[in-house]
Length: 204
Image: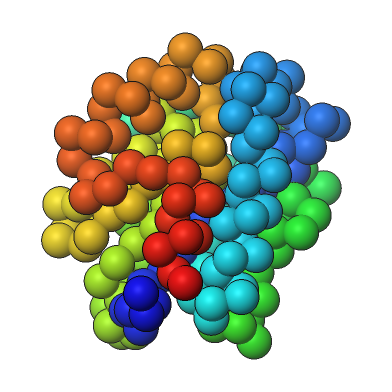
C-alpha cells in the first residue's frame, strides 16, 4: 500500500529525563518502559519514518528557565511539580532528545513550539505547521500514554485528523496506567490502535 503524502509521525516528549536510566523521571517509568520495550519500539518508529520519508513532528514539554511560572495564578499541579522537582530544565542534559531519536530537519522533521500542559496542540503551533504541509494522518508515539500523548491524540481527533496510536511506542508511570490507556481509552477515539510492527507492515 503506498504511503499517503499527507502522513506524519507525532513524537511526544522523547527527553532523556523520561527515557534514559539516569533521567529524573525514568525510575517512575521504568516498569512500563521495560514491559513494553518502549525505547526499542520508539526507535523502530523513527527508523520506519526515516526509511519511508515520513516527517516527524516533535511535541516537547516546556522547560524550566528563569521566570518559569512567575506571577502565574492558575498553574496546574503538574506544572508546580515540574518546577519543584527541577524536571525538564532548559539547557540540561535531561531535555536533550534521547540518543537515536533526534530530529532531522533535512528529512522534513519539525520541532513545534513547546506545550505548557498536556496537549501538544493547545497553545502551540502544531496544528498550523501540519495544515501548512497538508498533513491529515497522524501516527503517535512518545510519552506518556495516559497524559501528554493521549491528550495530544484526543485534540487531533477533535480537529479532524486521522489518528493512529501505537501501543508499544509509549509508556506510563505504571504498566497498569499504560494498559488502561491503550486497552480501554484509546480505542474510544482513535481511528486505529496498533503496534509499530503492524503499522510498518502497512507501508510496504
